[in-house]
Amino acid sequence: MHRSLPNYTAPQLFTKMYLIFAVLLCAVSALLWFSQTTSHQIRVLNQEWQQYGHSAQQKYKLLNDMRATFGYTGFIHNFKNYVIRRDPTYLLAAQSDMAAAQAALQHFRSLPMSSSEAEAVKLFKLVIDGYQKKLDAIDHTQVAQLSVSALDQQVRIDDAPAARSLEVLNQVLDAAYVQTSNRTTQLLQLSDRRLQLLSWFGIPMLILLCAYCVYLVFRATHAKADLESLFAMIPDGFLVANTQGQIIRSNPRASDIFGFTAAELSRMTIEDLVDPQFAQQHVQLRENFGQTTQHRRMAAGNDSFVGVNKSGEKIPLDIAIASLPMSGEAHTIAMVRCKKTELELKRQSETDYLTSTYNRMGIDRLLIAELERSKRYDHSLSLILIDIDHFKRVNDQLGHLAGDAIITVVAELLKKESRPSDIVGRWGGDEFCILCPETCARDARGLAQRLQEKLAQSSAIKPLAKMAITLSIGIAEFDSNRANTLEKIFARADQALYRSKQRGRDCITLDSEHSTMNSEHTDSD
Image: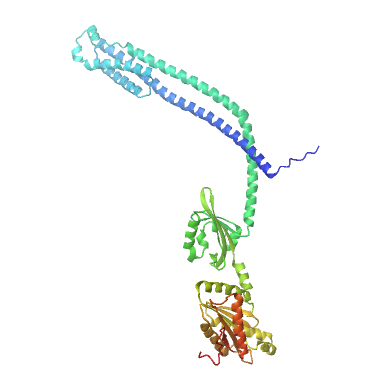
């Protein structure tokens, strides 16, 4: 019978995954705790055995040394032989054994001891100290004449406490061995039981965990591959930099924009891709921005952000940046879009194809911006409208190609004679305009007169036309007391141009309520 798989919603699926992960986490935690405690007990056992083995080995050795140097094979043997035989050689041997016994005793006392050991060592030391005093008091030349019994009475010491002390020390060491052995047996049994439980439950759990980890790795690998594919497909340049500005990651589009390979970008800083004159400013901007988690956008356009590609070409950029902590360190992520093509398209959309001056769209945009600036700062602004006189007759007599050539010559003259701050545009057909910031109407009239004079003297016009080419000009000035919208100021300039044509053309007329001026008769005004 066919059974369909459960149809979980996204929240249910995530909840189920979280529950599975929580159970696995608890199981792994228990397994780790179990392993850690068992490992700790084994380490404790090992440390105890090492400590006991080292201490017990030293104590057994010292105990044997004390028994050998002090007992009936050492000091006591040589001392009795001296008492019986009066031979100084035995006295020297007894003194040597005494020194060795005292050294072994001193070393034993330096080791950690129980109270029983300390008491036994104390008794042993009393016996040794007593013998040492007797040895120090012996004068071989004086006692040589004493009888054996007399000399024995003079040097006799009860050495039974020393023998009992050595026996007690040996018993204490044996008891410590038994205690350590019992504890070791208990720990080994406990560790063995835990290891059995670990093998019964831990290994299957570990296999399950490994299988799940393989699954997660498989999913993560695919997710990483998907992320890398997405990263490579991002249509904008993508750069990741650390707090020092070092580029640590880039995508193929960033390489396309700047002309550097990914390997070359990884050896560069963000400032290497910035116009050198703005590099230091950009460092300060990046450092300040790296301290926040805000997003910032730097757009190309009037306030363009300029980058530099591999060939040294300056390129306008639109950049969106964000600060993001990664691996405990703040990083800057930048999305970079090259505005070169966009700005070129915009320039083309605002440029007259014949004269390469601004077209009506560009003039409208710039005039609005200049009007706003003049209003804000109360600065002068003049608009000059220019019309080529009798241009229809030129087209009819000479043809449109000659007409286009004359329009081009006039446009080049306007651009050449205007200031860098002036904006020259073709308003349409044979009409041009010049936008003159920071210029009053009287100064604009001076420019208009110069244009008429230069055109009359132009050697480029004569081969193109059999007649004189003249200009009718109307000028309107920004007036804070009058309406100054785009339409209003153009209407005033157009009215002035219309009056110039009415007055016979080849005239300059200012937009004024009381004066109109003819370039031929009123220049002295």
